[in-house]
Length: 193
Ligand code: MN
Image (cartoon, rainbow, N blue to C red; front, side, top):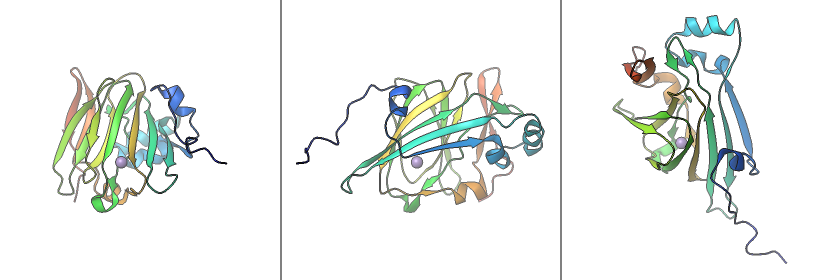
């Protein structure tokens, strides 16, 4: 007989415990995968002559046992930059605007860039101890503005699909660079709706 309680779990909220869950997919994005997303593509090409660093890794598990579940993921963005532009995730919209998401920052310091399809944008800082709500109709990209890995847990309804095409074509309206104040926001000259 199958227990009604076999699918629950309780784990410590830290990156090691999350990585030990039976996450379905791990993906690794290197500089070579992301070079065209950076403003200074020539600098990225020059860096790739020397090395192809990991920019970020994601683990995700669709915990959708009876069609009503949640998906759980962790993202780890390494510290680094291309000509001063901090390492980031590619970013996406949720298909059909259906379904919001929660972020739980675990390590490091970062920013979350939120953008409408009309190019309006907002920036929210990510730091451990906060809970961040991400409305599903906004594109979201995360940027590591610190010198240690930025790690966060994300939770979303398993029915959500992801659209990477719009942000691949348009880019994000704002970019994040190193500065004496920690980071500065620069308008993306390549942004085009
Ligand atoms: Mn998302």
